Every structure is written in C-alpha cells, then in structure tokens.
Amino acid sequence: MHPSRAGRLPVEDYLDGVHRRFLGLRDGAVADYIPPLGAVDPEQFAIAVATTDGQVYGVGDVGNAFTLQSVSKPFTYGLALEDRGLAEVRARIGVEPSGDAFNSISLDAAGRPKNPMINAGAIAAAGLVEGDDPFARVLASYGRWAGRPLEVDEEVYAAERETGHRNRAIGHMLRAVGSLDGDPERALDVYFRQCSVAVTCSDLAVMAATLAARGLNPLTGEQALGDASVNQVLSVMTTCGMYDAAGEWLVGVGIPAKSGVSGAVIGVLPGQLGIAVFSPRLDPVGNSTRGVAVFRQLSKDLRLHFV
Ligand code: DON
Image (cartoon, rainbow, N blue to C red):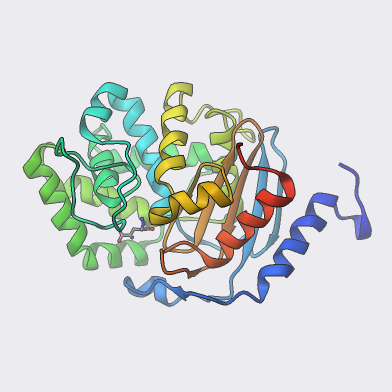
C-alpha cells in the first residue's frame, strides 16, 4: 500500500476515521464483578488489523494491556483439540449455541456443557489440556498465537480466584457428571489464569490473523494449531462466540468472533484478516459497545460478511 496524507497508509487513515466516528459512543458500563476489571479507564479504545501476510495496522490505544478473559476460550479449546483429538473433545463438550448467560450452570441433554465458549465448556476444555503443568502449556500456546511470550496479570488472577464461586460450582458440577476427570480445582486454576493473561489489541489482531491463516502465525511462521482444529474453533466462534448476541452478530457482521468482559472483541476473516477492537464499556449482553459498533462498520465498508 502507498503512503497517503502525512505519510500514513490509506488503511490507517480509514481505521482512524472509524476510531474517530465511535469515540463519542459511551453507552454501556465496564464489568465490575471482579474488582480490577472495574478499575480500568473506560475511555480506552483501540482498533487493530493484521493480515495473513503479516502486516499489522492499528489506531488508538493499541499498546495498552488488558486481560484476555473469554477471548482465551477458543485458544484453549484449540489446545484441548490438539491434545485429545476431536472425538474425545466432542464427547465431552457440545457445539450448540446455549441461549444462556456465559456463566450459566447448565448442561445439554447428553450431560455435556453446551459449547466451549460458555464458562462450563471452557472449564471442561481447560481440564482436557495435558501435562503436569497444563497452564504452562496454555501460556506457551497463547505465545505462539500472539507471536511473543505473554504473561499473567497477577492482580486479576488473584481476583478471579477469590471471586470465582460460580465457576467453582460449575467445575464441581462438571466433575460430578464426568465432563472433568480428577480434581476440578486443576481445571479451574487453568481457567482463572487463562482469563488473566495480559495482551494488547495488536496481540489480539495477530492471534486472530493466525486463526485466519489456518493456525500459521503470519509474523513468526510458527504453526499455533493444526488445520482441522482451526476449522472446529472457527465454527464454534461463529455459532457461540458473542454470548447471547451470536445471532445478531452473524446477521450484522457475519464473521467468526469472540468477545470478553474486559472489552475485547476479535473477528476472523478466513484467509485474509484478523481484527481486534478493545474498549471496556459493555452492552447489556456483555460485548464491548464500541467493539460491536466498529465491527458492524468494518463489515459494511469492507464487505466482510460471509454471504
Ligand atoms: O468470571 C469469569 O468467568 C470471567 N472472568 C470470564 C470472562 C468473560 O469474558 C466472560 N465471558 N464469557
């Protein structure tokens, strides 16, 4: 691409315009059910795009750190698929949209968590990661997605652990029905830690671009996940990635995506782009208000919708 005004690339000018357009959107509220999440600056706003050939563009607070929260779920699910194979993972975790809140204490008719994007399925997936130190493997895997080593935000992790009573209830329920083997606290600890991994909006764009490139990190050339597992991950992101707004999202945006309560949203245009938006105020469903608005605009302008 050729530099335009003031040496900027046209894509950056475009993203800058979208950023300016939604900067005034202040609807929604920052998640505060875990104290450190409630303490963040609600004005933060970043948009980053990474291509499958390794270009990364960003505007706004692209270098600010925040925690992955539920955006971690597809990546741990991917590792569980690699470790256990599709058949075992499918036997333990469904792939149907739940229609329930992300933290609902519910199972499908076969006694499995309904999908890996709600907490029950994510905790079950965390329990399927192999190794003596499963979280070390999760963290190493996230580093391959992002193209750099990542770390846990210890303050958020401590708060997740202290306030995670509902998640503990889910973990023990999963143990009772056989979705988890062994000590549920092992899976819960992986889950609390994975939610607490610190990233930037640029990292997330690269993680999404790695999904778009069928698991091959476009910056490092490292394979973060096998092709068959990428299919499975993108499919569940499509049906279940945006909480209870998955249907609205598919109609209005039309690409696989995942959001988290820290205010991050990633979207994947297979074969082409990874997109990430970070802004902490959430709509009533729990998705970043600006994040949803930006994705709708990008989808319209760039014709991202899959149909
Ligand atoms: O309480 C939890 O489980 C969260 N820390 C989960 C994070 C999240 O983004 C919720 N999403 N599905």
